[in-house]
Length: 334
Ligand SMILES: Cc1cc2nc3c(=O)[nH]c(=O)nc-3n(C[C@H](O)[C@H](O)[C@H](O)COP(=O)(O)O)c2cc1C
Image 1: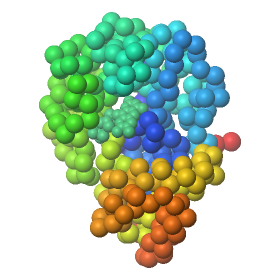
Image 2: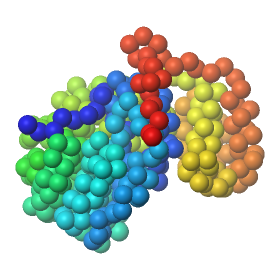
Image 3: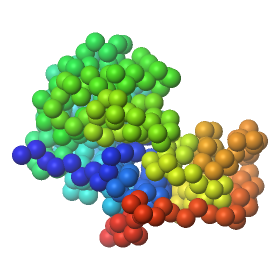
Image 4: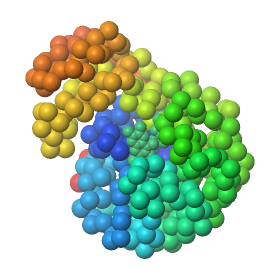
């Protein structure tokens, strides 16, 4: 029997380096019922030639556990080091381990990791297999792009991940050459669904809440993963339109957690908040004043402005079928 996937709902928050560290990720998970936002991932954790210590893995997982699982994502090219790190990740509390075969960065390519493995389906399969063998009942999932230069080997790559024993395959439907461009060809997701019998998670080009169901309907994928749209509007998973005050409160809470739990300075917290403000849409908080706040260098002024904005009417959490209980939302990690 293949391991059972722990996802609790159909939509997943994508792994995003520099963004989905515990502070941001936890806040997004806490906004949603696990029946809606069914899981999330850490930023990728790079494994070179030695297995990583448990401390780094615990740090990536963060201090909280949620109703929805957070998968720990590893990226590397050394099968033995990856397998041992995956085993340690589970010991550190990871409910699943995801393998990154999509990162286009020069560092990844130099190390023959991430999207470099899209040129080498046999090595991709081997890496999945050694991790699957190391984890037993805990699922290993794989995240690929549609290819390197083009999508000609998409089916071959998908079957390699399946043959290695992946429990789920996420397809970011752009090739490495397409980077993060506007094109997001969902037909590639449908091709992947047709090529394998394991569940497929579609990813790429979701811009708003309505796109989630649309991608599932058009491609037949089982789950949908959202990256950048969740950075503009963390409520994209439920489609809830929040007030300006609720939107500002999120950014304040984010800055606060970065400082108190992530050890960030005021300046670092300001930089992270500005990173989100570049595309932030929630609550129409910055529409007219975006450039002005992106230029702000004084953390005190930024946070005072956000506090001022956060005093208006707040948006209550959803009720009815999407309601959630505090216990469902977060369990403190002892
Ligand atoms: C800032 C940023 C960091 C990312 N970091 C990772 C990562 O650590 N691991 C990974 O598999 N993908 C990473 N990605 C890719 C996303 O997970 C996702 O596949 C991609 O953004 C496409 O989805 P979207 O069109 O919904 O944004 C990153 C993307 C962005 C924008």
